[in-house]
Structures are given as C-alpha cells and as structure tokens.
Length: 635
Ligand SMILES: Cc1ncc(C[n+]2csc(CCOP(=O)(O)OP(=O)(O)O)c2C)c(N)n1
Picture 1 (cartoon, rainbow, N blue to C red):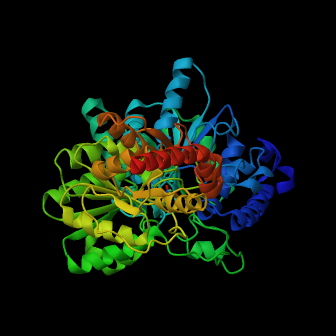
Picture 2: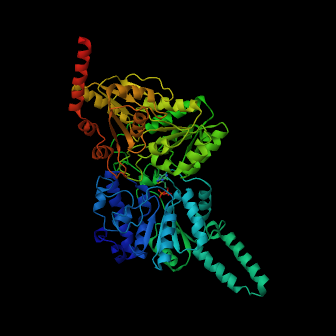
Picture 3: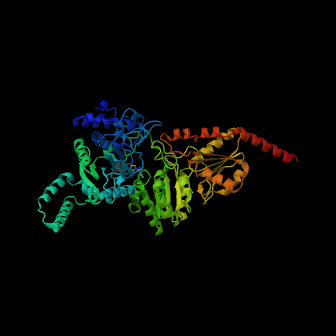
C-alpha cells in the first residue's frame, strides 16, 4: 500500500482494509528510518491510524492540522509527498523532525515546543471566520502537552468563544515519562467510560420523553439532564468549559476515528475528540519502554539496543553531583518540567522521591514554584533545557530575580543541540539572562567545573544560572583548576600576543587554538571567563591591555553575550587600539544538522576560527614589540 502513497490525498483512495494494511507498512518504514537516523519513535508509532484518518476526512492544505510539539509528524510527512525525503530525516538539509511551513504547504504551522497548538489553531479559526471562509481547523495535542499552561489558557478561550474548532486529544497516558497531575487524573476517569457520543444519544432520547410544562419545569429538566450527564460522564470538565466532548475513541481503529472526525465536521463550536492511543504501538520493545523510545539515537531493530555507545554527559554529571549534595543537605529539592531522564534526574527521583517534583510540561510553573520554595528556605534546583527556559523568562525576572531568591537554574542543552533544529537550539539563553539584574551566570568548561559550580551555587544563596551543553565534555583536558570565586575568571594559559577569552564548552576550543598558535610561535593568553555575570573585568582588562588583540568564543548569539560584555568593557575603560574579534552564532535561527556540521557552517570550529585570525598581523606586532624592547634595553 505504501507504494500508492506519493502525494497529499492519495490515502483517500484506499478503503479501510487497505488503510489498515498501510498503517502496518508505515510503521515498518518509520522504524527503519528512525533506527538509522535517530528521532522520535514511540509518539509516531502511536499516531499512525489517527494521521491516516485525519488525512482521509480532511482536505489538506485547505483544511489545517496544527500538531502540538510536532515530534509526531513523520506519518503526516509520509502522507504529504515526503515519503522518500523522510530518509533524510534530521540530517543537514534533510527533512526536519518537526513541522516546517517551508517544507510543505500541508505543514500549516511550525512547532517544536509543547502546548502551543490550541492557541495557534484557535487563531487560525478566528482568522477563517473573519475572512468568511469555511475550512476545518484541527489541533492535535497529547495528554502531556495538555498539562502546559498555554494549552489550558487556549482551552479556556476556545470553549468560551464557541469558535468552530476541533481539538484532538491524543491520550497515551505518557508525557516522555508517565504523565502525572490533576489533568491526568481527570483523563484516567474519562478513559474508562463508554464512548460519550453513544450515551449522549440515549440521554437525549430520555429527556425528549419528559413532558415540558411551564418555565420552572424546563429548569428542573435542565438540571436533571446535567446530573444524568454527570452520572454517566463523571467529570464533564470539557463540556463545562464550552467544548463538545466526543469519545473516548480507540485511536488504532481507523474506521471509528474517521466516523468521529466526520461527526465533528458537522458540529458547530469547539469540539474535543478524546483519542486513546498506545505509545510505541506495533514495536514491542518501544511499547514496553515508551520513555526510552520517545526520542532515540540510532538503534538495532532486533534488540532495541543503541548502535553507538553513549558516553557520560553533562546531564548525568549534574544528576550525580546533585545526589551527593542532597545527601549532605536535606533542604535541596529538584523540580522538572516533564524531563526527568533528559535532565539526568532519574536516580535522584528514585533516591529522594519526596524531594523530587515532576510538575508536567510547565516551565513557568516550575520556576514560580521554585521561587515559593526558596522564599521559605528550601533550596530548589531547576534543570530545564535552554530553549524551554524561554518559557519561564518572566518567572525568572518577576518571581526569582526581583526578590533575589536563591533558586538554582540549571540550563541544560545550552548552545547548539543539533538534529532537533531551530526550536531546540540553546543559543539565546546567555543573551536573555544577562539582561536580568541580580542573576549570577556561570558556565563550566568541563564536568569537574560543573560539579564545582553546582556546589558553589548552592552555597551562594542568590539566584544563579549555570548553563552547560548537550552531550559530553571535550577531549582537551585541563590539568589544574583555579579555585572558583564569585566573578573571578581563570587564566588557563599565560601569554602576551593575543587574549583568547571563552566560556563554557568553548574554553576547550580556546585551549586548542592556543596550542595551534604556539606552533606558529604565537603566545596566546587563554582566559576561562567562568562568569558571564559578574564578568571578571580586572583580569580581562589586564590581559587586553597587554596583548591589544582579543578574540572571544562562546556558543551563544553575537548579541548580548560574552563578546558584547568584553566590547562594553573596552568602551567603558576607554582601552585604545584594541583589535577585537567575537565568535558566536549570528542573529538568526539555527537549522538542524549535527553539532559539528553546524559549528563548521557558522565558522565556530577551531579551524574556522584559526583561519580568521590574522596571524601575519600578530607577527608584525610581535616584531614591533621586539624592536621596542631592544630600543629600551640599548638606551
Ligand atoms: C515547552 C516544552 N517543554 C518540554 C518539551 C520536551 N517534550 C517534547 S515531547 C514531550 C512530551 C509530550 O507528551 P505528549 O504531549 O503526551 O505527546 P506524546 O509524545 O506522548 O505523544 C516533552 C516533555 C517541549 N517540546 N516543549
């Protein structure tokens, strides 16, 4: 059947049996690709039938599907003319792992972060109504994403406004790990009920039989109707806030799904279809380990084992050190916004279940909650990926920084993350955190320094940001390490020809560049800034005054990072005749590719940086310096 799927709409030509067979073939196809390229497996295997049904009932691109998070769109991509191209999934210049409007007109809205789909779909529905058009707008959102504040804000607005819109709640009981929280409790009650469309019809029949005599009786009947509904569907949350609730429906039964979608098409106002799916469906190993196969590196299909050995990474070092510190200090707690494993907290969660809080995909709440805890003397450590910290910016400012509360904000996946692309790159955090008064901002050059920074942050009793990258530490080893002091940089290597100032993972690059320059008889001074804020102005100024030539290297944006801070220092201190080059990512969104590929493309790798250093000029300056020295000594 998959041979017959070449362009948008081809799936409509298949009957239910053929579509059922297609579902199995698509599963195999996706399994093959993800086992080679890595990617989001379990969520995609779970939505095969749902996506087939959506594409059968809707007319894309006239009708629109907004996919929440967007990690589950591989099936959608196969059904919209990208079957062959999907083999390049997540590769540089290949198909993106998330919806991209520039990839296909059937990708109506870019996503990557959670809980945005209902707002965007409602916006499109309102625009449709303003323009007087009549197309279908559908948001597909998971039960995990429904725990995010933005989704709840949108439900509130959509239900009240009565705008025509379909929300498909793809309920697989999982976020990345098991879904938890009050919304999940509500859904678990609904999951076990008979399909509401069936019971709804019998309620109607029953009520229609009651004779209506006078106004008071109408009120009584309405109340009776409501309480009968409450009896049959215990928590009519969605109906109560203005949605028509349909379901629950078996998300692996294409016929049933198509029937529900057709019903929803006929209804006016907002409709929510509750679809029950299984994460990892059809691949037993993923069904049994849906969290491990949520997002996976390349793996062997037979065994499910990763193809390449994973080495220690910053998240694990962070998690292990946190356990060590928590053993000594029972005030330390940690909060995750649904990223227990990704942020290295699995062991902590097992060891200290009462001091571990998974609060759903709710970064704003995570930081607000931490602020409350810190106010009352508990020490909250909040690891969140860099790009997801964007969500909690106001909480960092309003709840934490203004009150100078000691919350330790650990920014995981800082810098370039690679294959997940522009929505997930962590290049902006230094720029946006640097703006915030009262924050101390640090970045470690290696694992050991991360451990030291974490301990230091816990003792500092102030709001602290520690940013560290995805993956492992660089190959460069640093023998000795200066003691960590607030606002103090570390001089890794003394030199007189050029100052190389770096922060975080780029310190290793700075060291390598200095080693290479040494071969050209250029003596570089290498400074590990350690603190973006407060910057060690004293050490940096002294070095720049000596060398007159400085380069900065950072895995952030050119705007408002280390390079900017050093330039500001040069201006403030009126340092004259300084030649400065800053290496950082340009003012643009960085697409997907491997970290190494992107570093090369954006000229951030060692070779590109060396190529941009004017070695001849440094040698000229050396010669001038030598002449001056000689003149002084002969005088
Ligand atoms: C703001 C934000 N925080 C965290 C994530 C990481 N993340 C990606 S998918 C996911 C779980 C989504 O669960 P659900 O919506 O139920 O979809 P499923 O994968 O189960 O189909 C999380 C936490 C994200 N994409 N965006």
